[in-house]
Amino acid sequence: MKRVLRLRGVSGPTKGQVWDHPTLLRVGRLAQFELMLDDPSVSRRHAEVRKQGEGWSVVDLESTNGTYVNGTRVTTPHPLVARDIVQFGKVAFLVEITETTIEGPPSDQLVQQAVRRASFDEGIARLAFKRNDMPRAGEELLALLRAGHHLGHLESEDQLLDSILNDAVSVLDAQRGAIVLAHDDGLELNGKPRALAVGNGDSRGRFHYSKRLMQRCFSKGESALYRNVQDQAELISQSIADGAMASVLCVLLRTPRRKLGVLHLDRGIFQQPFSEDDLQLADALAAHASAGIECAMLLRKQREMFLNTIMVLAQMVELRDEYTGGHTQRVTKYALHLAESMGLPTDQVELIRLGTPLHDIGKIGIADEVLRKPGKLTAAEFAIMQTHTTLGAEYLANIPELLPIIPIVRNHHERWDGTGYPDRLAKTDIPFLARIVAVADAFDAMTSDRPYHPNKKGRPPAEAFAEVERQAGRQFDPDCVKAFLEIREVIVETMHDLMPESKKHHLPVAEPMPTNAPAVA
Image (cartoon, rainbow, N blue to C red):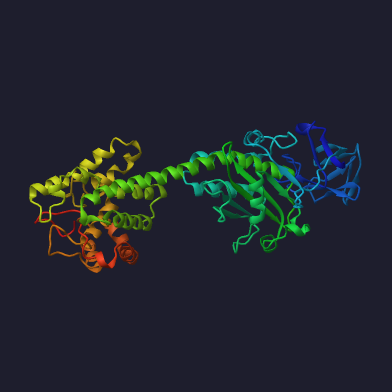
């Protein structure tokens, strides 16, 4: 049994509420304090109630409105005994002395000051209340609400993890934080962190976190508080020492179905150690966020499967035509480089990633005698070849998830001057993503051999870039051309990476052209 000091509210909104701690109660308006008081008479850092030997004393932290014991303002550490009235600003409390049972250290000698083995449902149930059943302070509750906001508004798994971690570091006043997720089999942690964050007081040099404590948290399936790691020789590792960690929280990320990973937070030697309320807040935050993390992980896997399916569909076109192997991959890479260089938002870049591999999907519907004809196409045959744009759009129209990429498939052969196909759109009437793919597609056409023109080999990159520049304002959007020329070194490097030397002069263009067609496909 151990004696614990308890403060019981006797006036205003705190009346009847209780706060206790075996060693320290920090008082103020800061959310990370053990006794957070949202009252204008209370300073941000108002006072501390400290354990001293067998008793306790209250220390004023130069607050604006003072700290009082039984009506007398304290200027030096003042002892507290049962039935004292201690007042912070205008908020008063009755001092009580209670006894509680403190569990000994675990058998493996890693000294944890507190452990939470709460289920997912229990973690969710503690969202709005602290462990003493008091409502959470404003900043704490806002962090939990923001976590819910992230789940509904962030599609990227990495963005979600970064946002959750930064909120945790901020509201729990940590000097740094890390999230490590489990391998897909869920049996052990991945050695590489998926998110890292630093607080205001930490440098952005080499990042430190304790792999040992994280793995222990994950394997035992429990969240743990290590209040004074510097005092425990068995806890000291190179990461803890180099990171000047004094207090560590390792919080289990989990859902009812599986363990997802671990959230690691630490405070430095010049900060107050984490408290059990901090552990409970972090655990509630982890439980609240874990459902979103699991959904994001599942969506990522679904997206990867979806992308793989798209690449298989794109390869179906290339399998029908021995000359077009690699065209889809190269055009996709060129288009992505161009989109990123033009500063497109992430969602638009993803549409390029999805849509470009399928830009020629309509060729599945073109007869072999036209698609695989070794010589020049007649005007009638070329008219048939042009229908691959509208056929592709028709194929994708029945797949709701692919509707946003239809403009790429249908309009990547439109021309800036309005003479392209199939809709003869001009200038900014052409969908912007289609204008990007048009440049990438044409460049690959010019640098690849033409099967319908046996004596025409692919042009050297320098000539192709020059032709793209000449076609600015005629075939291509001038802004797209300017950006493409600015990344020519990246494009050439990508071309060489994707086109083996032995095949560079044996790969045809993507689009057969009639005799009177312009130079650019």
